Amino acid sequence: MTKIKCKDFISAPKDHISIILAWLEGFYTKESDPPIIFSDKMAKDAKNLNTYCNDHGDDNIVHAADMVMPVK
Image (cartoon, rainbow, N blue to C red):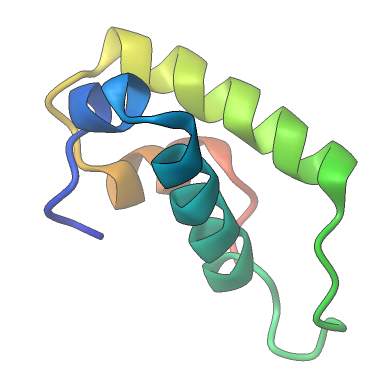
């Protein structure tokens, strides 16, 4: 995931973006939390990630997620 740049993420096809977001949601979930995808949280995180990536196109997606998504 660290090879994916923000500019590549925001210009990717929607199905690729969805897969990346699902992976990030899992990565940024506490190990003790139940394995549930919360669509409202995912939509909020996607919006925040998109906003960050529009301003920081050369950052990798993991760094971007570190900046806008709650840490595990």
